[in-house]
Image (cartoon, rainbow, N blue to C red; front, side, top):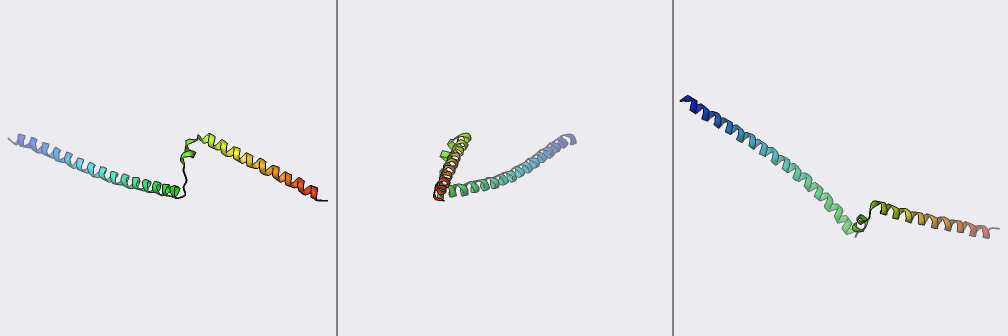
Length: 103
């Protein structure tokens, strides 16, 4: 008769060990969740700060983000090239004008 009690005791011990293992796993997962929530709250806070300043300065990023980066870079290059040509030509014209005035 000691054998049936021994089997139940072993089964109870195994069940208790399994419950303790699962409790430890739940505790670990709760800690991971708390760390993940802390990280996510920090990311959201940073995003809110950035959006606040964009909104306060009335900057709309949608038009910029709609363009392909190559198109945006090409537009910047074209504007810089136009500015360079304009200032170079006006500087040359200014030099020619000064030469005419100088005896």
